[in-house]
Length: 222
Image (tube, rainbow, N blue to C red; front, side):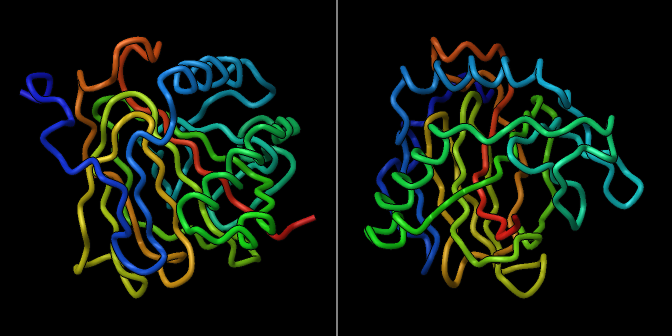
């Protein structure tokens, strides 16, 4: 049934869901979405292949790759010690610039945007049956914004509270091209993805099915 409905039935106005949590629908142009999707396929041929990270003895259902720093549960490293030991691919300058623009446009705080130096990108691919459990982004040593970009099929994104994985939470439909920014009181909110909606990707994004999510982070590491 999902393919019978497009995202026009959902709220598509920029909004602040709560203090520190901003959703800007359609932030990336169709051309930018296509270009970034092509970069995603190029990254897949990099030193560390897309992989299902092992968390608490179970493989995640999403496939991940990283730029700048390699993420594994509770730590960052310059080499993918849990995969093949290869050095992680470098962070790309255009992603840093995009992250700063995202923070500026979401928060309206030019000084905060100028001080933002994302040095890690975690890129997740969700097949149509993939989900992401409720979790915090808490391995970073600095309390800087997290910038999240969506490409491909839409997803139901669950934004929780900062204390635990249970209610209260809000469910938000994230479509291709959408921007989501966590900062301030929402920076360490638990969050996850409960569903991918197949057949909702826009024409021309060059992703056959599923969803790409790119999160930009400032680790505070050197």
